[in-house]
Every structure is written in C-alpha cells, then in structure tokens.
Amino acid sequence: MKRLPRSFYDRETALVARDLLGTYLVSVSDGKKRIGRIVETEAYLGPHDLASHSSKGMTERNRVMFGPPGHAYVYMIYGMHFCLNVVTEGEGHGSAVLLRALEPVRGIESRTQGPALLCRALGIDRCLNGYDLVSGGLYIAVRDEDARPVVARGPRIGVQYAGRWARRHLRFCVRGNPFVSGR
DNA sequence: TGCACGATGAAC
DNA sequence: TTCATCGTGCAC
Image (cartoon, rainbow, N blue to C red; front, top):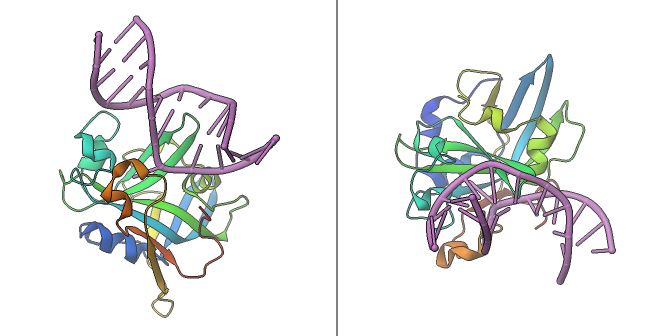
C-alpha cells in the first residue's frame, strides 16, 4: 500500500480531514499488521478554533500539534482513553485532524467506532505521541482511486463548550457507512 | 499544591 | 442520564 506523503498533510486542515476519508490507517507492530479504512474525521483548525486543544496556546500536552505536519498527536482523555490525531499545515500552525472511526479491513478484532475504540483496537497509546507517520510502522495509505467516498458533514462531537465553533461543520464521514460512530 | 474538567464509552 | 478515572492547565 502506498503511503501518504508529507505534502498531503501540509494543506488546509478541513481539506485534509475530508481527503482522509477512504484512506487506510495501517499499524505494523510485533509482527502484526492491522488495517482500517478511515470513515470519520474531525478538523481542528488552530489556536483561533475554540474547540481545538491549541486554542490555549502551546502547552506540554499539545506541543506536537505545533510541530511539522504528518506526525501523530496522541493524548489521553477522561483519564482512561486515547485519541489519535494527525498534525496538519505548516510547523507552528497548531492544527490537526482527529481520526474518529475505522472500517476494519485486516487484523482488527475489536470495535473501531469512536476515537478511543479506534486507538484501543490498534494498540495506540501515548508512546506514539509525536510519531512520524511518513517513515515508520504507523502510517496512512492512499485510498483506491476508484473508491472515492460520498462525504457527509456535520458539527463536531463533544465540543459544546466552544460556542459558535461547536456549530461549524468540521466533522466529515463516509455517508451511510455503518462504522461511523453513532453519537 | 490543589482542583475543576475533558475531542469517551458503557452501563443503567 | 450517570459514572469511571486521571493528566493537564491554571488558580492560589
């Protein structure tokens, strides 16, 4: 499978979020290859986006968001779950795309319908924070050219506190796909 | 040094 | 609708 180049991530964040639909998240670790098709994403645009972690400026937790594109930003949420993001746009921008759901393709034995379940299914934890998706065993592969998904949009999940930013349609999913998270 | 609160998921 | 569970960021 052909890996997405860094230039893919170095673009406007909402475009990256949309174009990630239909691509494949691939994890190769301890001899196991796990593949899921990305069917749901959310764009977090930068410090001006009040729903984004970067809206409070660069901190110890979110420093990877401000680094170069094409790296994984993994954080713990609610004291018990991990979420996986991919950093977008130029270094210092503070933007990323949250991967929310996968359609299992190979080597996946548990649910992937939601950002924390996705991480659990692929064994992703904070060890992978800052990991370069362009050079290692965790990466994203191009979608099949003849399988361009029909895209649906809506408000992002769980960011009600963000005022008008909570209402922006920055969540993208493959229309009708049963593996899109239900919330 | 203390404390309020999550980009969630599962149970009730 | 409630709760588990704890790292982070900021107030004091």
